[in-house]
Image (cartoon, rainbow, N blue to C red; front, side, top):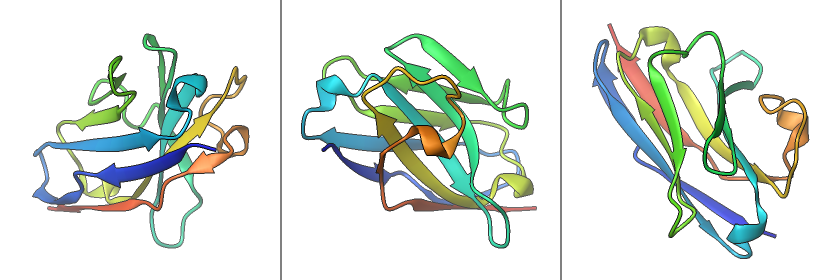
Length: 124
């Protein structure tokens, strides 16, 4: 099973940017689908962005146009570039993976490997 480790979280002001990364080890080349999820206190976990292979991307309406998901071909590292951050983007962000393919790419039940999460705080 693949191991996932998130990095790059932190605290920013509204309008700022952060770049999250998810390091992948252990049969990483077999995990065709990867995604970012987030969970704010008292709320359900929600899908933010997914990528199948290296180019098949999908975004939630809440982040479309502001976030960009990508995957490095050499290291299989997953990235999430987050621009124009809003206070409502504050949450724990989780990296997820599945050998694929998946049908509902932004649904948490599609994924069987998860990172520990990393916190993103956005102040107004």
